[in-house]
Image (cartoon, rainbow, N blue to C red):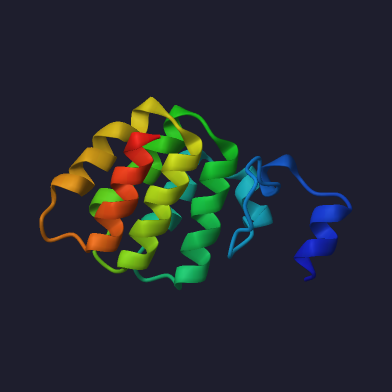
Length: 128
């Protein structure tokens, strides 16, 4: 699938980023028919490939709102598989600028065992 063509032709609004960024993974079209909680389960499923989890992350970000920020925040504090994923989650929470993300961002900052890359992004996101 040529996602650039998809993006320039016809695409569901949930697949188009409302942010001025180039995302490393496009949202999955099937996420349109899923609940926010179901997409959150995909994001937190550590047995899935990172690419699929990234797709879920960007679907939640693009959908927006408090419930999506809370699902992303859960991934930030519960994930134990990938500092890179947690870093990206903190980044998209910063893009969303949603008050509901503050608790998870603070928890990430307070976790001394967290990778410094993740803590740095969490502090940047919280400052926004």
